Length: 457
Image 1 (cartoon, rainbow, N blue to C red):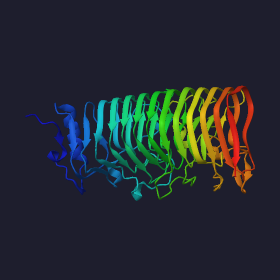
Image 2: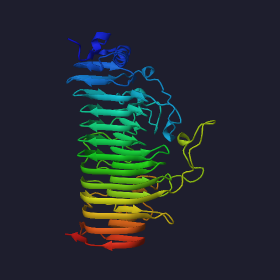
Image 3: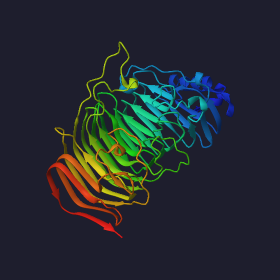
Image 4: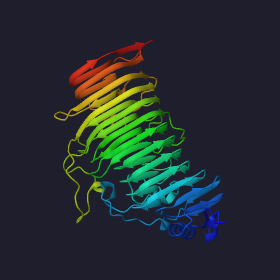
């Protein structure tokens, strides 16, 4: 009978949690790519490893009780060059599991991938540090399936997909709270991605769509996920060079993080934003839908910003091309149209209002809010952290509420919009809140089919 899979212990790997299995695991993956048996099986045990290069046409399966654990030896994590241009890839990064230009890849099983971000050697305190490995980094890959795994504590983002096509992600359990920039899942300049039934709890953004390249992130569907973050639970941007097109996020729950430690510099245990769209790098975003989403306790339920992130000469050094490398296009104000928020419920929110902000001469167009319920609470008003002006906490027209900085209204603030429909929208706050519920500035073509603003005793 032909073997159904390749077991890593046949290549000399030892699951004792002490032996470096990098070479043995890589031999197993390479053998699967070259042979007729394409599945690499990791049995129960603790298997210590450095960087592993994934291969086309293979399956990596972690059995129940299997732990693939990243080593704390930085020498086992080489910096990896790849030819895909991106503002995040002006220098080579490290990664635990890496694949470039491969296809027909499956990562699955009931086991756990521990990415080692808690090791002291990776605690450099630097934002976007290429010396801290991604958990799983796939670049330019096609026909990828990732399902059912437990992913724990990357040194940087947990899962990054860059310019990948036809990706299915299902049933992941992600917990990423050990370091700076601990995003849960980043979908960057991809086309055709389905994400469902995942639980993601991260220090930084939980589910993040980006376009660090000139290609849009498009044709993305996210459903039935539970998301927690000390930053933004659902985030578009801030990287938005290529923009975002045809994205549907539905049937999701945003809840407070289970983490007992705080690694995000804003120090907001309840989380900053539920849905955060930052189109600030000159890209075009259109046809973005958010439906049937419930939130609990976020500082700011909905934040949308069309604008310009960097003025001339202010781009940070780690986002500038090195001498001799091609420059990215000039990053100006882009375009944002076709936003639908339908069936959104937020409880215990505030004190920052939901904000949808275009810019003078660059209006956001065609915005619909339907069946929205937002309950704002003033029980705790956190200190306003120092933040750039594309984030809610850098709100430019703040007023004092309970002696601390907050937005001048508690419900919704709209600015520079063309075509705004409010259909069955209810916002409420406590009777102690001195602010009004809504404010509109430079809004053209506003239609109201039901808007209720009230304060409860």
